[in-house]
Amino acid sequence: MVSPDWLALAPHGILGLTAMVLLLYDMIDPDSRNRLALASIATVGSLAALAASAWLLAVGVGPSESVSLFDGQLVVDGVALFFSVVFTTVAALVTVASYDYLADHSYQAEYYSLVVLATTGMVVLASANSLATAFVSLELVSLPSYALVAFLKTNRGSVEAGTKYFLIGALSSAVFVYGISLVYAVAGSLHFETLAAFFAEQGIEQAGVFGLGIVMIVGGVAFKTASVPFHFWAPEAYEGAPAPISGFLSSASKAAGFVLAFRAFNVAFSLDIAAVSGAIDWALLFQILAVVTMIVGNFAAAVQERVKRMLAYSSVGHAGYVLIGLAAITSGGAGGNSIVMGAAMMHLLVYGVMNTGAFLFVGMAEYWGVGRRFEDYNGLSKQAPMACVAMAIFMFSLAGLPPFGGFFSKYVLFLGAIQAGFWWLAAIGAVTSALSLYYYSRVVKAIWIEDPSADFRLRGRPVGLYAAVMLAGVLTVALLPAFGVGIEAAYDAASVLFA
Amino acid sequence: MVPVQWYLLLSAAMFCIGVFGVLTRRNALVILMSVELMLNAANVNLVAFSFQHGNLTGQTFALFTMALAAAEVAIGIGIVLVLYRNFEDIDVGLPTTMRW
Image (cartoon, rainbow over all chains, first blue to last red; front, side, top):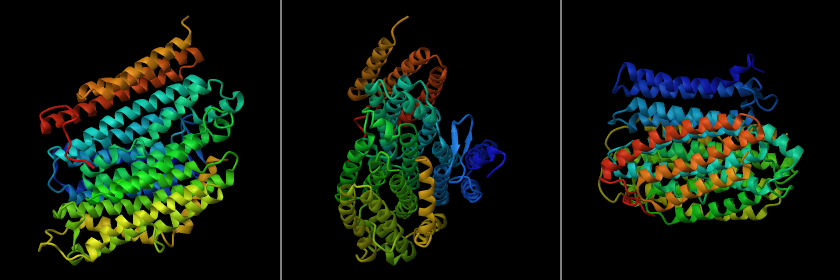
């Protein structure tokens, strides 16, 4: 219980305020090079929002009680808070790491405020309870991301990545709005619960228009989560962007797309109504997307020569695993539904930590000026053993090897899919996971087993990057003993959507 | 009163023209204009059906869409500017430093 109600918006407010403080700092001291102050403000803000989310969960906002604000436009429940934890954790890791990565860049305050603004958008998106707030907050995530990807504005790769990301993003947000307008045309409302009540009462009369609208909304979600067939921007954007931003986009921004899909498709367009009335069986749509995304992402990752691009394609593959959480939903199977969706949420949490860590390790390699290909990483463990231990943990955890968090989240996800009767989804997931072990272990082999090809000494001790990589490593390991707590919270949160 | 189907046809036509522009043009600014056309197609729907349903949700949301379209263009023009500075052109087919 919180009182007054608006206290439930504490994470949103803290993040928005932090962004404003950063801009204010920039106004008072323009072109500031005080990296420590800027990075600290952003990190402290993210951690404060993380603490606020944890506090709200602790006082019982979530499974037992959800707070509805602004005439139901925003709702703070277990799902929103669970995802707030994911977003703010990733944001804190990224801002700590950016302290070193941005050492020689100007416009530092803008960079940090854009990161925090994007995080604000994600947290609002997690509580968005109508298509209008969902669209506005989705754009609040997207617009800063475009600018951040193109942040290295004299670097051709970064500008090219930003251009492609922006153009595909603008196209898919236009498709998304058109989908919203078609749903509004059928139902006359944008609010999730009103839509659900309308469809339950009247059925779906203009099934064609409604179905087209749903397909277009799925397109917008597929872009944000980097799922096939809207994944083309992902390898480009993740490879060209500054490495901390690649980690931020591939972990937090992906999770933001999924939380919108989880809420919209289970609350507003629930399968019970959408499929039974013959308008559209969106679970079938997500089954196709999940299979294609898992296969394309993992096979494309296996043939890459550059580490960052391999991670980019592997992130597409992981979007496919999480899509199982929507694909394995069955009409009327409330208990099984919340298990498979809770597992998908837990996978996003574990993935958020380990994938951010992996991208930050790549950022550290970029900071040292070692190349981008697998061979260039040869023998890094001789120079930076601790960071390489962390990287090995990330790689094995991403591949889903048993003693790590990534194994358990994939295990419960596939088990949930089998229990819901989708053994073939789990089978494809297991086979592609086995394939992923090949390309993840190439990195481990390069840094631990191969000898250094040239005699080089790493220059500089990037304290922030080191701290962030180690912290991500510790969190990945800590998610083992904490897995039970996390998965229970995820199950409870997911069951609210099927209530 | 114009039947509401005509508005749906108009907006679908606008949307398709926008998609066609995005797919065929190589100039980044023209692609941006085509995207605006697609967003405005959605606005036509929203306003027409707002009138049809007799509530103001659609009209209000159309205002939001316009504001966000303006914000998107502001970011887009900035990116097109750095694109021009790096590649001396705004042809989106030129930047190919990354290929799989």
